[in-house]
Length: 148
Picture 1 (tube, rainbow, N blue to C red):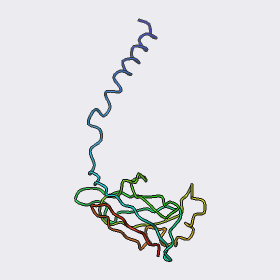
Picture 2 (picture 1 turned 90 degrees about the horizontal axis):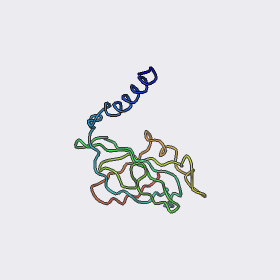
Picture 3 (picture 1 turned 180 degrees about the vertical axis):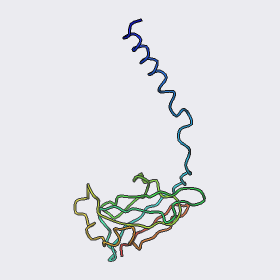
């Protein structure tokens, strides 16, 4: 067998064995399970009662774990009528029950034409200074968010 044939045979053997010698079926160790989300939707309103047009609302869990289940941050885009539907990665499936700090801010990209998100008070745009808190229950949650 020539040197070229030996190298080729060795490479073929390596390519056949390498994919099955990794982590195997075990994979990484499991983490804590994520809690089951409940629907969360509603309207975002300014202090004068007018709806926010455009923007983004973000939900931060006060306690990231409850009953050995993880809560996750959620978010929602606000539509032209002020309506939102919260979810993980904006999937609209809801949030895990518990208490959340809520922020509202203009979108970084893709803001709606005629958006009123520039009216959102600065303190509500930051997690550390926002006074808005909501509690998500194990039900369909209609929660209007008041930007005061």
